[in-house]
Every structure is written in structure tokens, then in C-alpha cells.
Image (cartoon, rainbow, N blue to C red; front, side):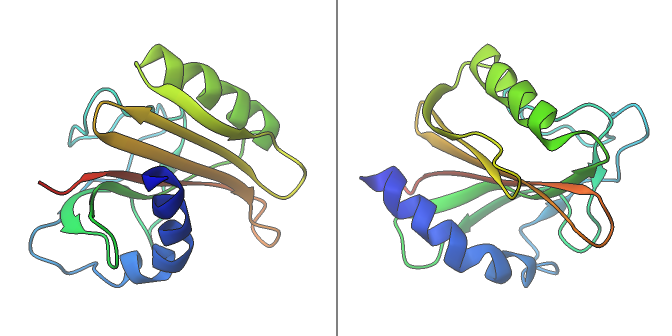
Length: 150
């Protein structure tokens, strides 16, 4: 049930998260190079799609802030972009998430508009959305990793 509440909160918070770009507790990751490497490490159990790069209006970043209206804290949030086929991106994440020790909770295969991967690992919840930008033709991979507040 807590994961369901977190998922609902994701929808309400996506716009709110990007408003915290100047929050002092945030560590902004440097943009990734063409090989997908980044200069600031995020936890190695968070899968990062190869050849993806940060979406500058909402870069992938590490937080430790409360998720408004819940008992959860945001851990990793942001968006990566790639030119890859969205169905292939989805399949890669399904495998990568389990390879990194996450238990899959819910999957929504790519239906032409969106794909979603939701998983749990210890106290943390992972919610990934994969969707195309019809204007730029980029594929957006939106991350929300949360954990229960202590």
C-alpha cells in the first residue's frame, strides 16, 4: 500500500521536484558523456541506461528531502534522455533492475506512449517511467527512488 501511495505521489510531485533545483541539500550530477559515464557516483544499485544523458531541465540527482504529503524521502530523482527504442529501454531496465537486487513490484510494458518499472530493494522504492518526447524524438527515463523516513 505504501508503494501505491508513493506512485500516486510521483504524479503529483514531478513538477514539484524540478522546483527544488537550487535546494542546498541537493548534489547535482554532472552531465554524462557519450559512453554513459558520469563524474559523480550515484549508488551503484541504481541502474543507468547506457548512452543516456541528463535532461538539463530535470537532471538526475541525489536528494535527501521529504516527499511532500507522504512519510517518504526522495533519494534519487531526475530524468535521463536517449535516442534508443523505448521498448528496448524498457526491456533493458527490467533485466538491469533485477540484476541490481531489486524485486519487481509492477511492470507496464511499452504501449506506444509509456512504460513503467516499479521495484523495491530493502527500504527503497524505485519508480521508472519511460516515454517519448514527440517533439524532440528523445526518450525520457524519469527516476524517482524513495525510502521511508526514519
